[in-house]
Length: 246
Image (cartoon, rainbow, N blue to C red; front, side, top):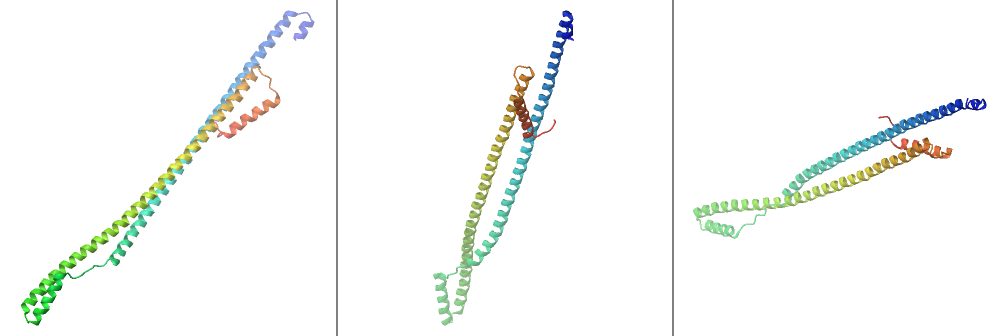
């Protein structure tokens, strides 16, 4: 229509046609920019939602890992406690069998026994009876003393066993604690990797979308190869994030 108006010498109509064309171009440009902003907003939402899903999945997996390890620790400690309980019974029995009562007659008892023999030979039976009673009381005292000494030896033996068991128990607790700290360290490293991955994706998306905005405003030439590369880059970002719509 513009060319026809110019050919017919109707320049005012030609001017109106030029203005209309410019107006349509501006409207089209605005529409494209609006569509681009909507597209980019959706991409940002998808990436952010994907990162959120990734963090949630990460936390869920690690919570499960920690719960599993805590349960393993609990079972290991319980197993050791059962082993120690059985060991105590065995060691107690072993101590009872091996540690005997050491009953050696004292010099007083030997003297009383000799005096008793002499009294019998001399037919001093009343004296022999009294000496027998005295010997019996002395034997009871010696037996009681020997049993007390045996009991002390058994107790000292069992104290050593218990002490060794406490050492073993603390060693296991410390080892489990070290493993737990190592697990926390691994989680921290993995979290840093997840965060870095999210940050890199965000930066890359911002870079690509920045170029898209420049192209949409006509400030930069956009060769087909560049457009395809940037399109591929956006697809890669969306794929490496957890895809989905919030």
